Image 1: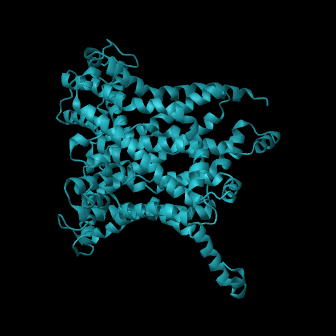
Image 2 (image 1 turned 60 degrees about the vertical axis):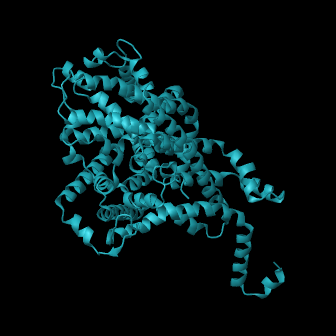
Image 3 (image 1 turned 120 degrees about the vertical axis):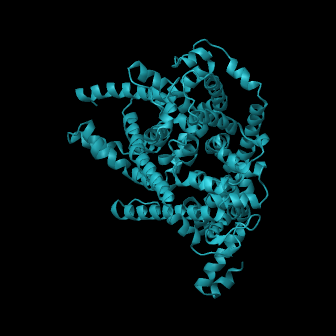
Length: 316
Length: 291
């Protein structure tokens, strides 16, 4: 572009011209971006718009956006349904308990691993604890069935050896949550500890030296140097986990629940799956799904805001 | 540094504790492997710990004869390879432009992508979309809807952005365009992150069963994970019919077969995992770096 022209024009104009020049320069980049953007519109934003089906009647073979407006009809249906609230409670409890027990363990594991000075030993522990994360939910549930079988499983063999009765873990309501949570801890504790381990290595060693000079032992150093050092990571991870409170562990529940454990095991996602995909009540389940999505979004936004104010750590 | 006595004691217990954790992590694998190799009678008596008893390969030969298993395994391989290629392409195509400095409108484009991490269409609208696109019972139904992970894209973008700007500036002076800059300079320098992403995506496709469950009614197109699921569900059904007495032969025969299926499904992951492990830790690390 002719520089003379730029000089004559106002500053604002120049800015836009510069921008335009840059856009033209980067046209290949925009061209490359076009594919993912179209992809995102079709596979993410169209379903997002498809949420309006929650307010519209669906006709078999008709549009995915429904045929005519029905207002809050489907919302009223599930809000008045006591079974829905039972499922809601199950989801919330499973999620909160899972977070309560599952969240601190990777932090503790990272702290303990950090004390290991033997490099090879540390690596072995890391390799073995990360591994379960790479298994399919189907495989995990299969292993649970083998381990927990009342007649042939290893756990019940031990119980019987100690003189207890064998327990049918997978078919008793009272055992559903412990089995779910413990297997989740087993599968993800190693993987989730990686972030904390990384954060630990980035703590300035001088802080430890200073603390040692002040007479702080290893325990005090952990409390006053290590924990504050990884606090931002802890907070970020916590915020992210609260964002999926209502969409907890759908795949595992779907594989694990039986008619006997349903009363505590059925969660919003499995309920949506049965009513929607299996029974084809599309509008009703879209309403349930939208309710779930909006609450998730609300929770993560609120937690993020609180965290921003109190700890000055936030996602956005 | 000198350690106090208490700390030395702690380190001993710490070592023992972590060794126990390792055993706990490994035990289900060994138990499943042992079960798959054991004789029916020992499984029936509940004698299997981590060592097989009455070693035989009957369970494996039984699965190998099952054509459904074969078809499933072949499908899984195809879905995994094509899905991973598609995912890598689309992830790179997003991460690369968004990693370039001074891209006009970058903030808004980023927001457009990141927003989908926090809110979306939910199960039913996504299901209806696939139905309306008429891709049910095709490979596209299992690989397209989840082919871009925005989270993985952000990790990759951080990696690309960490490549020194001077390299691309030098390339620009040599008259190399943006596309060749990507293929000739950026990608060759990004092997660790590409290896990590390949593992993440491949494992995701390999392990997937749910999208096939809802999008594929034709059992000839099912992945092997759905085959395993039918074995799992078979056992659950038996359990629900109240048939849980210890001498249910059908259940036990199933147990060894189930163990063998689990092992065959898991072995490919166990094989590639050690080779990629050194890369993915740094990959996860990049994910924690905030903008």
